[in-house]
Length: 482
Image (tube, rainbow, N blue to C red; front, side):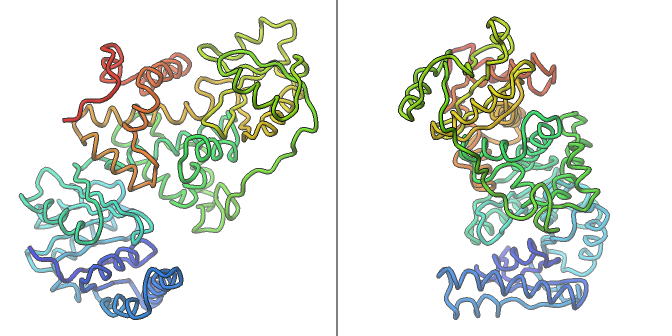
């Protein structure tokens, strides 16, 4: 069908952004809010967003006026009766959405497609509340909607033939890339992203590493656009908590249980940027620590030559005092430390890319050795990330389970490799998708890292997915594209 008139119910930051996307594409938009005050806030979101685009030279004043002129704002849902498509962006509470869809079903013409922007709730449950379940779909945009290029188009077992294709084509008309998936909690992006963010909160809660270090490790070391805590603040801690709850209800996987730290912050009303404070109080800032004036060192283990060269170039002398620095390959740092005459001098070092050094202190590492290792990394031009001597340290402990989840998603037949990679690149702004990252790191390396995590934690979800295990055993370096 031709979509020319679109209704958007809920004009918060997300809903107003969706309305702007449709208006930019030349469609007439009916924006609906609960009352005049909420409607005024929605109008403000639209005006500020388009004004920022004008200030940045992305829109002319004339074009801004055209976009705003295509949007009609109202507090009456009855004004949606002639819409070809209605999409909701109200709070992520199932009973609210079900009630809304029951009302929309009565108001809208029979051929109207009803869409939900839910990030995790059951499309099937929402569709079942209407008399047109075949014409109810998920249309999940990403924040900020005018900028992010991905739309997850979600169908159910009763979606009418052709509807998903029509909505996917509409997404293309909006300048978006559509990824069509089935109705599973979290769809593609949140099903992979949120467990990774939740795991970061668990590591911080357990004292494995600090907030700033974890964010620096993933941003500078892996090349992600934001660290997990900065991203949680942007998403909203309450939203992340709710999505993890939905995932846990579906999977009963204890790794999907919301982190206690996340629950504590949400209960305290510290929701991230929307409340002015979450993991950060305002915008995150890069750590600025002191640089060592002088120090001596000894470096052993894989990667020693590269690190030694960097330290010598900075004017430092090898002597073995006060810190012995090791990049461990296959065993916990403590197993190496106990072989030394003075195990308190050992700090494990894991170089992540060319900007980050994870520093693993053991139960025997002295404060002096930990400080010396940290300062040495700074003068070598690396960002030090102190952490405990745990399998995977920080980066591998967060990255490898995420990659394993992506393989599990593909192996289950839920989404293709290309769709998963596209979804994570466009939905999260990642430099590469999980399968591209797996093949870049090396399948064998990731498998061995997962085995180390499983051996330490005995967490079933850390065990390498059978497909990954089989490909490594067969000596295959990449995934088959179907």
